[in-house]
Image (tube, rainbow, N blue to C red; front, side):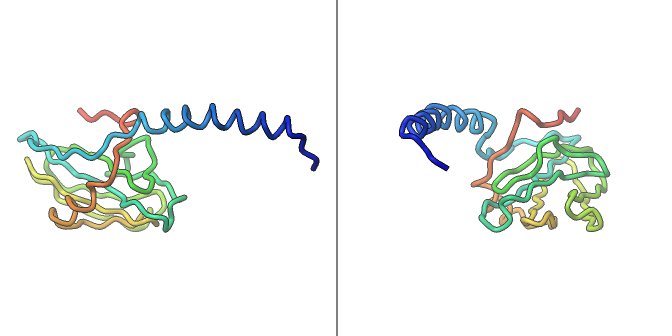
Amino acid sequence: MYWKIRDVTLILFMLMVLYPSMTVIAQKNKVPFKEVTQIQEDKGLVYIYRKSGMSGAANRFLVYAGGVAVSKTKMASGTYLEFWAEPGSYTFTTEMQMNRILTVNILEGKAIYIESNCNGILEVVSEQTGRKRIKDCTMLVDDQIKKD
């Protein structure tokens, strides 16, 4: 294909103009991790996160609690979600691993950390491990499903 200098210049100019604005739009929905310091007495909190990494970076998936999507946003590499719930037993799964169910007992006033790998396999990790690994994650807030 024959490219004229004018065509290449136009494409480069458009990229220079559009790329920064696309980056700002993508970043405006991301909020750095901030630990919740006070959990409501009648609720429990589950942090569901996926560490950042190149392995499986293209994989994105929904997370379900009791068969209901926790968020409209698909989990991507380096993201996390907050799931607030009344105390009790809950099942978690992802759309990539619907046959792998993780059962978690949510306690009143406590936080639980669930880590997902790039294939959507969920596992509960210790509070110490979860706090350390979730720090580099961001939460997508605009598409969150509000919990009552």
